[in-house]
Image (cartoon, rainbow, N blue to C red; front, top):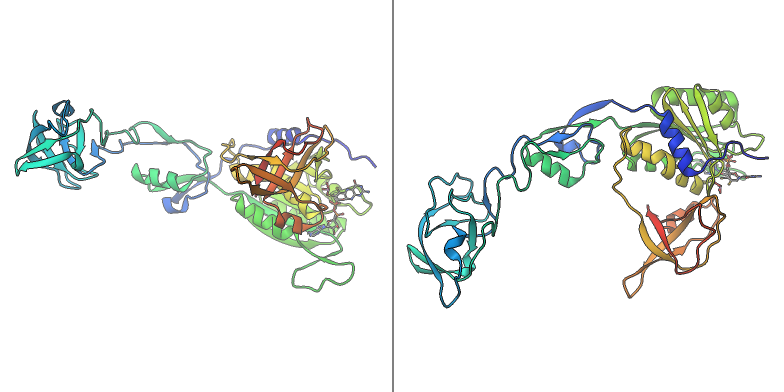
Length: 409
Ligand SMILES: Nc1nc2c(c(=O)[nH]1)N[C@H]1C(S)=C(S)[C@@H](COP(=O)(O)OP(=O)(O)OC[C@H]3O[C@@H](n4cnc5c(N)ncnc54)[C@H](O)[C@@H]3O)O[C@H]1N2
Ligand code: MOO
């Protein structure tokens, strides 16, 4: 039996994007809760950072031109006429031929344009030093606004906040951040063969894997997962559970029953959920071909393949970007690693293949990817793997030694 409406991964992504409304729901959280959240709007700095010219070394604030030509044998002599105290405004003016003692982080006195490190000075008497190495204007200091200029946009909407972003926001005095609401994701497993992990796996039964892998993947992507448990292969039972999951979440993932077997009710249930409904059933991909993508009431609904590897791969390709961006245009912040594949691998053209691999570093520093062999029903292969290598749909396999993109887990 042929699956209908098979799209490439790229087509599946774009058709989903064109049917999903832009999310607008944001909330304001304290700065310390902003990590990994998606910034909802641009942040403009209202002040310069630093707010004054600032020394980066312990030494003497000077006028650079007073030091020109200085050498160890012929030092430039200047009068020490002041001292900058840490955390205090440098009041007064540094005149020509003068130096002020200054600590690292101290404010340069007006008139100074560089700092001489203490190592390149010698004390002649309490009021005079010799400078043994010249400095240029701007040496050993950061200028007012050099880190952040007042009025500049420091972080743009759609950015996932990293620790350094929190630090910068603190530097400009932002204590609360507007972030997108996380995407709530309902997760269901279907199959008469499935049992909960605390139950015995009687002959014919297997414990539910996908609820747990998907739960972890959703959390990792910044979403809020909620499990709806194991649902029997039964239209009414699945429909009731899916309707509840859809009502309570922004996205629904159901694994199993996506294929074309007689008992595969998932597609029929998704189709009956609402409009616009199923956008594709089948993707030109391995593993993960029998995947369903739908949009219902502005929410993405995915029918993921039952095989645990396939469900994880399809989640990563289609669901994860939507969760990670929280509905804003995605700012790409992760990139694949390039590694040489260690054996020939065949793949059909017209289909994206994702090959589980482990990575090794050779003595010459290069990184190679060893394929992890095993069917897509084997969760242990994902545990072994460091990532998946992408064999693009334009290629008919790769030869040993060829460089491939590896997406790390
Ligand atoms: N004649 C054909 N059979 C199959 C084809 C095909 O093209 N022709 N495609 C295969 C591929 S590829 C995949 S992937 C699976 C997809 O199957 P379904 O999405 O319909 O899922 P099920 O039949 O319900 O399950 C498949 C497999 O995965 C196990 N499973 C399901 N859910 C879980 C779970 N939550 N935790 C652990 N394991 C799970 C299930 O027991 C089955 O072994 O179809 C192939 N068949
Ligand atoms: O596509 Mo299935 O998802 O290969 O195992």
